[in-house]
Amino acid sequence: MVVAELRDEAARGRGECVPYARYGESVAGVVAAIEAMRPALAAGLDRHALQSAMGPGAARNAIDCAFWDLAAKREGKPVHSLAGLPVPHPVTTAFTISLAAPADMAKAAAKAMARPLLKVKLGAEGDADRIAAVRRAAPRATLIVDANEGWDERNLEANFKACVAADVMLIEQPLPENRDHVLAGLKRPIPVCADESAHDLTSLPGLAGKYDAVNIKLDKAGGLTEALAMLVAAERMGLAVMAGCMVATSLAMAPALLVAQRARFVDLDGPLLLGKDRPHGLRYDGGLVSPPEPALWG
Image (cartoon, rainbow, N blue to C red; front, side, top):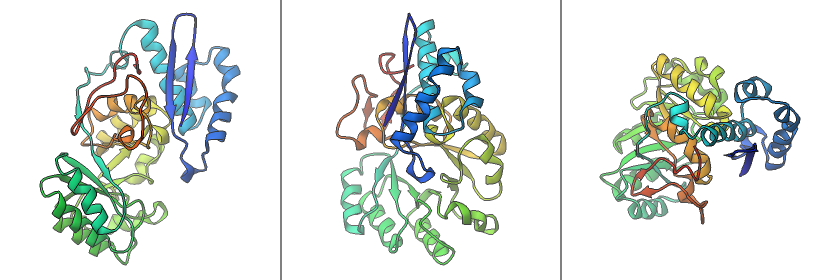
């Protein structure tokens, strides 16, 4: 994780990001990209100019969210007010069941069976057995699946059938980004959500006809500013929205909670997968996650 901090005489703002190795990002590279913006920031570059000064990705996300936090601290107003959004409320977040042998996934699901929404990681041989085992272990939970680009044309139909049998409500990124054209001609018995195929605002038109939903992640979009624009554009396209995250602390989840307010599915369980969260971290109560305290962000 990388944290960017912006300060002036009156306040400081923070933003956290997670470099995404799949897109060639690293901690060192993201830190260097943030540091490279120091002269422009010192010369007065603002949040709006940042959107064209940097491309989408983790580095811009950290700075963009720090700008929002700084503005909230300066003006004594919450970010939702500055953005013209309604007062945020607690939302139900998914809890991740990691990819493993069916028996191990069933054990993890049994421990989490009281949670209302489970996100089941798939993407390997034997996925039909995995999702069936999870459903037996958590009979009342709503299930969504993340195949992480792990399926192909040969097993797609069988895996869809297994998910239908398990009453799965959403399947995330079943095919690799460069082979997802297959989805355009496929009858989809379960809504399909783009993750790796969705990046920033410019990637949304390419999802039409192939996907029913889009997972908006601030680290890919390059910040809350772009993510809110993606939210509006996705809704206009008729795409359902999922608010997603990387494994990170509550500082990274806090701005994403504003996107989550209008999302059909929310997957902001990153802090629950860590050994320790930040001070003033988000409050998780069962399946609910509440908006942040000002001491954390926003």
